[in-house]
Image 1 (tube, rainbow, N blue to C red):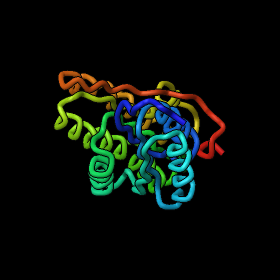
Image 2 (cartoon, rainbow, N blue to C red):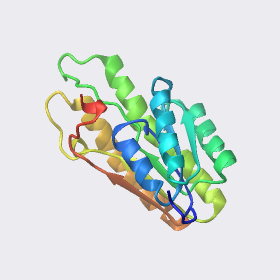
Image 3 (tube, helix red, strand yellow):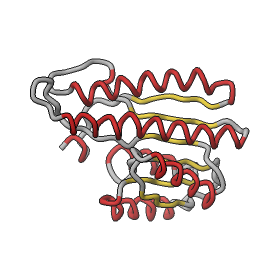
Length: 197
C-alpha cells in the first residue's frame, strides 16, 4: 500500500486486461487511476479497481465504448467530477481482427477504424480539452503497434489503424505542446494477451 500522496489523476481505456491493466496498475504506484472498458468486461474492470484501491489510491470504473463520442465525453466528465481532474490519458483501448485484402469484410474493417482510430481521436480530443481548461498541462499516450510501422499479410485493417494512430499522435503533439501537454505513443509487438489469442 502506498503511503505517498497522489501525483495526479490518470485514465486508462481498455484497462480490464492485458496491456491496459498493466499500465493502470503501474500508474497506481503514483496516481489515482480511473479505468475504462466495455460492459462485457465490467467484472474484470472491477477487479482492477480493487487492486488499485489496495495500493492506497482512489479508483473508478467507467464502462464506455470509446468509439461512441457521447460515451467518451461522459467518461471524461465522470472522471473529473469523481476524482477532481485529469492529468494523464492513456488511450489504450483497441481491437484486432485479421482482415484479408481480397476477402475481408467491410463491417470488420469499419469496426477496427471505429475503435482504434475514432476511439483514440475522441480520447485525445476530450482529454486535451479538459487539460487545456485546467491550465496545468498533461500527458496523453496512445496505443500504436509494430503493425503501425510495417504492414503484414492479413493485417491491412489493423495495421492501417495503427499507422493512423502514429500520425494522429505526432500531429497532436505538435498542436498541444504550447499548452504543456505532451502526446506520445507506444508500439508493442505481439504480446500474449487476450487480444492476440
